[in-house]
Image 1 (spheres, rainbow, N blue to C red):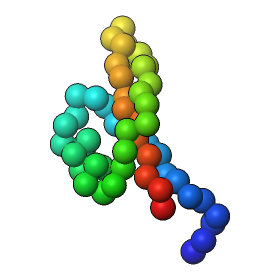
Image 2 (cartoon, rainbow, N blue to C red):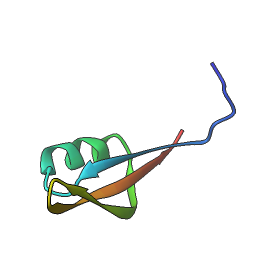
Image 3 (spheres, rainbow, N blue to C red):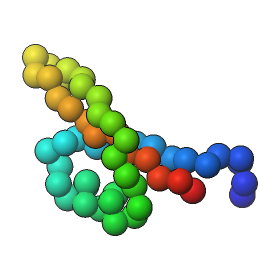
Image 4 (cartoon, one colour):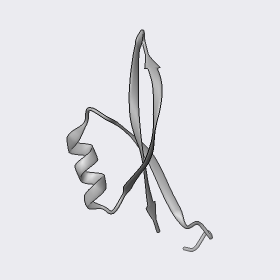
Length: 52
């Protein structure tokens, strides 16, 4: 199936080393980060991208 897309991206919590390692093994690269609030606590997701 070809939908004309060239990249896939996702966010993963910066304090989840297992998930980060998993996605990096699949070829994802960090392209940025995003801060969000969970309750009263600011959290950071790493934004990862993979060319498909």
